[in-house]
Length: 118
Image (cartoon, rainbow, N blue to C red; front, top):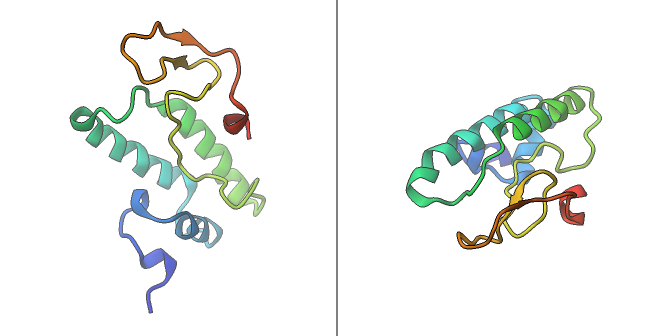
């Protein structure tokens, strides 16, 4: 019977359960998962224009911090280190917000939306 870690060969295609099981077992880390997600996003974005902004530095910093917590067996939650995307209709501090429109005047957000802060 397949295990959760066998359900997808690429880290960017694994389930949350498979990723956190891998982190806990130290088979791979949040840095590995975020690296795979960023590589995939960079590969598909020129064709599909799915992302208006990809925060490589922020993602890698968060992944490093999560990796340290997992190495110390102290993740913040069961989803610590899971790569996520945030739509351009949700406020993220110091990111531009255009609500997915090319006609909206972009402006920097002063604070995170509650869902982002959490």
